[in-house]
Amino acid sequence: MNCALIMAGGRGERFWPYSTDEKPKQFLSLFGEKTMIQLTVERLKGLIPVEKVFVVTGEMYVGLVKKQLPELPDENIIIEPVGRNTAPCIALSAFYIEKRFGNVNLAVLPADHLVSDVEKFQKALNNAFEFVSRNKKAIVTLGINPNRPETGYGYIKYQKDNDVINLNESILKVERFVEKPELEVAKRYLKEGSYLWNAGIFIWNTDTILENTKTFLPNTFDILEEINKYSGEKYFELLREMYQRVDKISVDYGIMEHAENIYVIPSEFGWDDVGSWNSVERHSNRDENGNVIGENIHYFDSKGNIVKSKKKTVLIDVKDLVVVETDEYLIISKKESIQKIKEIKKRLFFK
Image (cartoon, rainbow, N blue to C red):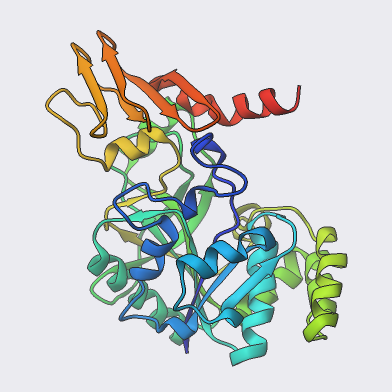
């Protein structure tokens, strides 16, 4: 059986103030009318039925999930009482899903990524499911063929000339995961040709998730195993009490850097993690002067600007700015500096 787990607990701080703690970017409409989480569920249609799709999210976002995904069964919403990064939330979900369906193949996906070619995405995901079905201990990730020296993504180095199997797509052995590089290093990765962007999408079965958690994060495993012994109110009581003691660590650091039998499918399906306003520019319609603007924006002798504003806004002789206006804040930044917004938010609120 194939299932999907959508991780929707992030706070989207690099999109602040448009993205807030109360309504982070996965619940926002950045491209068209549908929200990021709605687009994520939509691209699974025809491959995984909605009753086999799960969403793990913070307790404060359960109402948003139900409102935006009314077709999702309530019991498919897995509650994380406090954010502890991706490794614990995946293990928590694996325990939860195994209790429902037994050992299943599970695609783990972020809720806030963009995919423009759904057909190619589903093809890669289906091939990963087929591989994991035949190789029970395997972990498969979808790596994105890079087209620029990107410093905002992690990378996956694969072993050259090590084509494991061909299901209309290569499946290659992963050599190692690499953190976000400096620009010169990213240029070298691009030139070498054996590095892919890490899309944070993993396909494995729930037994493999739990075995690796037990091996590399035994504290987390023991806590979750104890919680999972119970159901109903007792389950939620222990979850709220004990979950805060699991390891706060990403799945990349906690498991992927140590696990064996990791494979990657080099993919090209128009992926972007939509990590900043600059990534919105890449996937939005621009006018003849490269501006990303709405109907209420007017500009004169201005180029390359990104404007998200409710008020009528006038730009005069400016270039490469990001302007974001909400009910509480007006942010004006050079495009090259907008990545600092997460740090700026911390400095404003934690002086």
